[in-house]
View 1: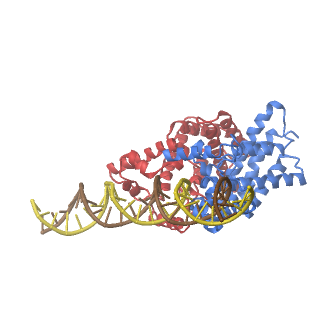
View 2: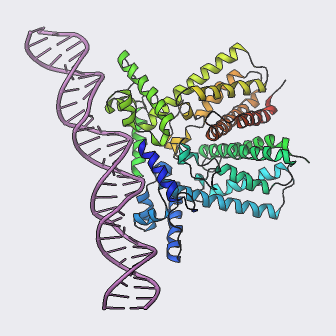
Length: 230
Length: 230
DNA sequence: GGCGTAACATGAGTCATCCTCAGGTTAGCG
DNA sequence: CGCTAACCTGAGGATGACTCATGTTACGCC
């Protein structure tokens, strides 16, 4: 019990001065940057192979061909490593989404939901380790103690950050100032629900149960319909 | 990696002959039964105090005033212990739900959603360790490898089992034979989504963010509305 | 009572894993 | 060539899950 608390505090203070949470040293030189990326890639591979519970830091270090100490130069602990991977995945996802929305601007809630989910499913199928992406503040590794949370932005949960970026991509939703807060709330709920249902879809079928994916779309469209002004 | 695999196999075979998964010896005598319950109660307490990550089997044993070996007589491993608690919580929840539906039979989807969520929120506030209840097959501790799953029933996920029992309580939903499978699917999706959003509600506010709880109801009603024949 | 047997109980010890840190190596510079 | 600072390393400390040899009880049988 004490151990957990102290560790969380150490982590916080270590990352307190402006850096991303849980990260120790951002790689400054080319060689370091390559190692950093290699560690993250190996982490993704191993997550797909042995799952989160089976992931060991020594296995990551071994396959990435770096000594274990190097891993801990970049990442404060195992959680931070996985979280950094999740953040990278999330960034990729948001980038791709922005691109697709730029290509074919969505005109309705259905469009947004379809594109966002299809893109998610595609990445989940093709990107190693994408399964650890969790819009819900990384509940898989935070484990009920809010002090353990690693956040994408400072002081807001992952899903809030994602919701805000998603908001920028959906200008056609109603937006009287009074409703803006409500829309952010709705988008947070959407993220969390979508993530959960899609996790279920990939749990019951490694390539994503089509029926559940379809149902996920229905869920979101039905919910968000009330905010759409056509 | 091998370790994880072997452990999962051992667990399965140990519980293979009809017993609940992950359980070793069902207490047969009064003294044993009391110890069993005490272990589960302490587990719930500690989960609220230190969270899942901070939970140690030795701490449970110490506070329950049983030697560590006794814990492992009942439970194959730490997961099994937590899962047994979740199962007990789930049972309590379903019992209470059946009772409330018996008192005031719900006449609409709104009624069901309101009662089910309010009851969940109430238990979450009052029952120690209720936070570990997870309709989604216990994704917190299963960690991506399906072999690690501990199931409520045999061979179906938790949420499917819950969905089926919930179906028995909602006879007023449309039920042509062809649609029955679709309704089960919808209820599974509902469980998963509701669980996720409510977890978020309690993450952002220890007593459950009212706005998110309200939003959760809206989500479910909007989704299930299509299945309601009034 | 004495004895055999089987079920149950115990906690010191084994082992895997996370993470640290003292000491080594390299790079840059005068 | 010597000095400093940054970076790298992996043996080892600490912790915690889980085991298993040994001890204890229960119970029947002679």
